Structure formats: structure tokens, C-alpha cells
Length: 388
Ligand SMILES: Cc1ncc(COP(=O)(O)O)c(C=O)c1O
Image (cartoon, rainbow, N blue to C red; front, side):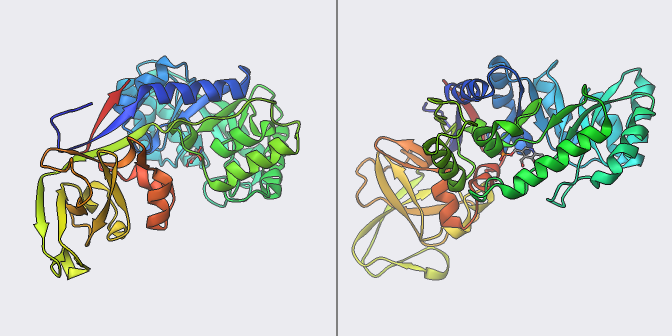
């Protein structure tokens, strides 16, 4: 891929399909696979990701907000869309217009969704979120029975599901807290007293690790983009494999293929004398004659300033350290050992280049954050291009 752009993200259709196929095998064809495409598909670009997922047979698409639902509806005319994030009453017309289903925890929003649905003559499916220990979005389990009755009594709505979200399943190899959360959800489901109401809780870590969480539907984000949720999830997977747990089918090894690569073109290459400085604050000083190249990407585009003097990018298979501070729209790299460096040459900020590469996890570790933040913060203005 060699576009005439100063920076772009390559989104691998093959990797997306491979991950979706692996997840389908993991579910054994019995449960629905919903892929989370909120935050512009974790920064991968809804416009390129959604058509591939739809073609790959993913059952549902999950967004955060009414606004995102309207955006995804433009690229997925018929597919079920589920709004997993918080909504307020004024979001109801947009949710209905997008023919989405939504999570509800508030009677005013229930009323507004019902009224908006009746106004256009459709029935909107809704899911109640159960508070099971994350204390984010959700209703006290003791209130679920009564709230389910309110939903059932509202014209224009259909109670379709009951859901929760795990607090720490990807943060630890000890899943006792997650087990308690799951039990609370199952108890709430029993209190609703309707087996036709779908039940779902599993994010990527739960989907990969524990079949008991799969319910009727799983909500997979990060794994669909080819990234393990965390080292702990990988460790838990290996631990369970080795202890021949009955929860994992033998021989089913989840190979995840990273989907996103981020590249930019060098715009200038210059010699810097021994003793000269690079960048704002003069935080880098050359100890020997050095070749420096300019990359037209900075923290505005999503290359974090904490990567200053820490990270490397790859030019033609050679690691090139970031020198000096990352600026708003530019950064400088050391190309002394990269003979291919010249204006127009491609630098890889994330992804593979020859035998070298930079992973989202590596960038996250340098930044002191998680890889979810790394991919989802690449500025929407950086083109997303689909590669085979
Ligand atoms: C409600 C909900 N379900 C599922 C997910 C997917 O999580 P993951 O990316 O770890 O699979 C998210 C992501 O934040 C979420 O908010």
C-alpha cells in the first residue's frame, strides 16, 4: 500500500475476518457474536470496519451512543445495532430513527423511547443493565423485577435483554469477583421470569476465557481488532489450557491478528552535529553526528507526547528512536542507521515493517496506559484505508 498521503492507517480486512472466524468457532455457532464498534471502531474507522464485519457474518454491531448509532446505520443498512452506553430522554428519537436497540436504566428514558417508537409505528427492543459490582451504568438487582414491568407496560417497547459488564475480568487471573457478578445477573434474570429475555455479559476476556459467561450473545471489542485484552487474560488462558479446564475446548487456540497499522511519510531529513539539540525544551542533545527525520504526526493526531524520547518508529525495517519532544503536529526521529530515510519514505508508527514492528501494547506500555486508548485516540482526520 503506497498512497499519496502524509499519514494513514491500514485496516486489514483479512485480519478482521480471521478474528471474527476465530470468535465464531469459540462460540460454537450457538450464541450471537456482537462486535463493539464504538469510538469509531476503537479508532479503526467505522466506515471501513463495519462493511467487513457485516460480510464476515457478525450478528450485531454495538455502539456507545445514539449519535454513533445514526453513523453506523449509514454503513450498515439492515444490521442490528445496540447502544450500550448511557442515553438521556432527548436521545430517544435518534435511537428510534437508527432502528437501534438500547440499554435502559431510567424510567424517563423508557417513556421517551416508547413515545418516539409509537410516533413512527415501530417497536424498539430494550435491554436492562443490571448493577453487579462495577458501579458504572446499571440498576440495583432488587429493582430489576419492577423496572422490567415498567418496560413491559410501555407501548412501543419490547424487553429484549438483560445485561451486565464485568469490572475486572481482564485485570486479573482471579475471576471470583466476575463469578459473583455473573451469579447476580443470573439471579436477576430469574426474577424477570422470562426465558425469552436474552442474557449477556461477556466482553473479549470473558468470551475467550469462560463459556459460562456467553449467555445468548457476547459483546467483543478488542479481540475483534486482533489484540488480547491484557497480559492477565493471556496468562489466564494458558493457565486454563494447562489445567485442562472443561471450560475451554481442546485445540482451540485463539490466534488474534492485529488489524491496524499506522504509517506516515518522512517530510525532511537533516544532519544534526554532535552537541546540537532536537525539539522543544532541548530535551535531546546529539552526542555524535546524527541524521534526523521529520514525521508529520504529533500529539494532535494521537501520537502521545509521553512517547517523547522513549518510543521508536520503523523505517524500512530499521528501528528509529523518537528524539526530543513530540510536538502538536510533528516529531523527530533518529534515522542515522536507516539508509532508506529520505523525504517521502514510509515510517511505521504502529504495525509491522519487515522483521521489526511496534505493537499497540508496546506503545501503551511506553505511555503508561492501555492499548484501547492507543488505537481509539488516533485522530479521525488520519485516513483509514482498507487493505486486503
Ligand atoms: C458494555 C461493554 N461491553 C463490551 C465491551 C467490549 O470490551 P472489550 O473491548 O474488552 O471486549 C465494552 C467496552 O468497553 C463495553 O463497554
